[in-house]
Image 1 (tube, one colour):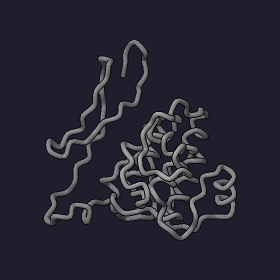
Image 2: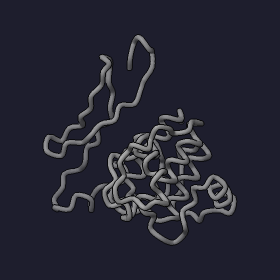
Image 3: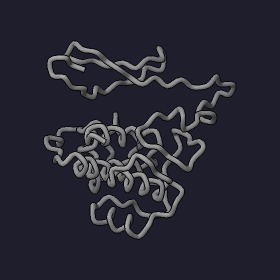
Length: 197
């Protein structure tokens, strides 16, 4: 928060696994607020097995899931339900409900519908999320072409570059792997914050 500008602004941060801290830098002196996520004590070596939705902090309220694994890939149906909710300006979503005809038509018209019954690749998801970002913020992402997205297919390259430039993703290793809930919800949070939702 800057007193001179009387406004909050988003500052990207990076989690340091060694120190357990979020690190960020800024050119402005001000008051900073953050969200800290504490996980329950773990007995197993696979921490993801015990992390619940309460530990995946997001502006989205996933109503019909007791727990999700942050590193689990998102299905096309789940992806479409989340994008449809954001497109409508809703923070509430039921990801296990069927995608309605109206939602399908709306997402298709916007060019952000993921093909059904499959895991959504990171590059396809980020390309769709970049389009959703432009729609919700009513801005066109420009000057993104210098953003490096090695390994991304030509079909999705511009969209992924836009997503990286807009801060929807920290990096794009494994572009053909499925996007995870953690990655998707981080991008959705950026879209919602920048769109004022």
